[in-house]
Length: 127
Image (cartoon, rainbow, N blue to C red; front, top):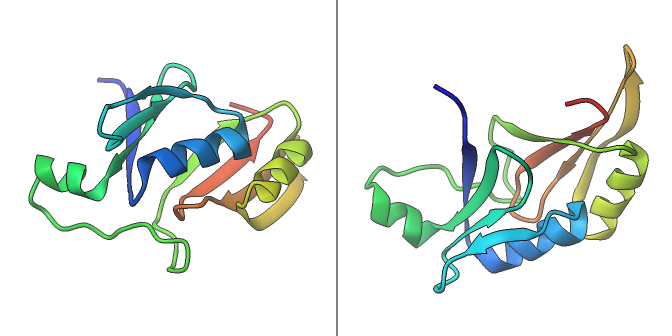
């Protein structure tokens, strides 16, 4: 078995895809005609976004919606970049909430932001 991607359920797929482009430089790989499902071009494992109605049409289980003004859900997306400080500044300028400015520990530089839809993202210089 292998991980092929992560899907985050959001209010507005197109808005979130645009935010990820502005904040992290990740372009849209695919978006359906209805704008209810989209994927980022980000390597082998995809990061996808689906609208809440799209998700609920696939399964009937309730879930906790990620929301920027509520406590974060217990997971993070990890993005590797060449310059953590520069990537952190770009994400914050695009509207990400700064959580932890760039720091270095045992040779790894990392920083945390919270995205438009409320997802935690760690930026680091190591994959």
